[in-house]
Image (tube, rainbow, N blue to C red):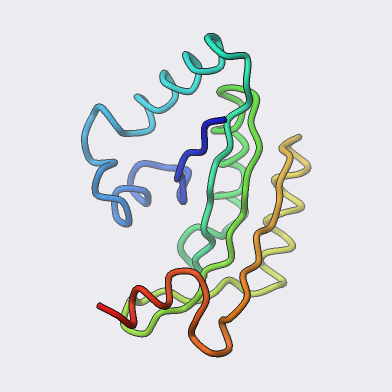
Length: 134
């Protein structure tokens, strides 16, 4: 199966956190073509990985845009709660915002799984250890 690190459903936001997206061979237009090709060739669903950042990619508009991306080919979304890392400028999305986001995506017909990590209370969750070691 193919898992794609999406993390934002539009090029401007995605490019700001994923510099690779700034190239025409890896932007969302190219991704749309690649996803459609993959599905035609394999008949398999695509999984989009989507890390939630408070006030950045967690709005209802972002949810609707994510639904649009998911219409390119059969897909599902793994929603990942961000584990705060000091100095990176992002915060964790609130549970209330997360719930509203999920409702909007599910209403659009997209299957979604929320991935919750452990160890945040001791700064040992996914992404936090790498930041501590850097």
